[in-house]
Amino acid sequence: MHPAYSVIFFTVSSGIGFGMLMIAGGLAAIGRMPIDGVFGFVVMAAALATAAAGLLSSTLHLGHPERAWRALSQWRTSWLSREGIAAIATFPTALLFGWGWVIAGSLAFPYACAGGIAALLALATVYSTGKIYQSLVTIRAWHDSLVTPVYVALALASGALWLAVIARALNYADPAMTHLPIGLLVLGWLMKWRYWVRRDTDTGGPTVGTATGLGRDGTPVRLLESPHTQENFVMREMGYRIARKHAVKLRRVAQVLAFALPIVLTGLAMLPAMAGWPALAFSLLAAALGTIGIATERWLFFAEARHAVTLYYGAERA
Image: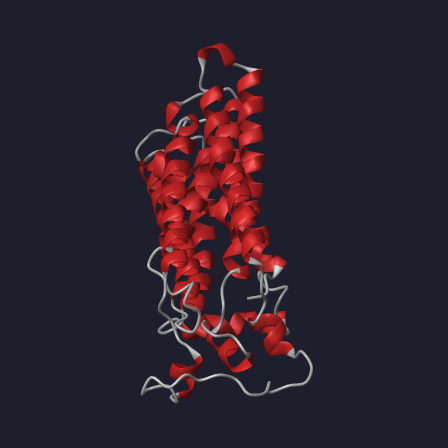
């Protein structure tokens, strides 16, 4: 599939925002967030701004973005509709949570409860985003049970990295915020690694024979002539190819930037000898590199996927 940069930005940016909201709202619900108006304002502003920026960018690849609201009507059958509804419902709940935290200076029951609900709605939004891709049977690489959990894990990990930066910048070195990224990064790395292993060892999937129905008796089927003499929209968008050697290199880059280096840097920031500005610098570098790494992973997620329609344009297997 052709990687649309607007969709990559959407999944990375909204993942950071909703990930931060999941963690902040969850910690507030169990009484682990400091009642500090400045800290609350920075966290909520960062979370809602990145989530909103991601959601808005998702409309840029549409031919008629002004019609995007129509997608909300198909919530019974469409994960895209469910994603939109969950995202819209998240914001007023999060604003109520932020009002109590920042303006009222309280995380008592109604505001803590709002934080917990906002966290659940943010989780539902990211979960729905993952299910949009997982539900596509025509793209075997996406129709995998690990796709949605990886989306959730990476959203939580990226949100935790930036939340740790804010916490250290405002002198809140609570382990619930500063140590959490390591566990989430390890979890995300293991899940993504398992996903890649599945893809590399997968020998199933549709072939030209099964797609046309001509190979039911085991007869080899091959394309005699291309349907088009020139590249068309389907070939550009659905038949995007990346060389295997480049994919392997980019996977290594993604693992180093998204997981390995952020884990090491976050670990260094946790050392007592690194307290203060060094810890903040390590946390900021970990978050920046992690974001670049996740964007690389997301680009690969699209670039390595093959749509079943490519079988009609010469691909041997989709």
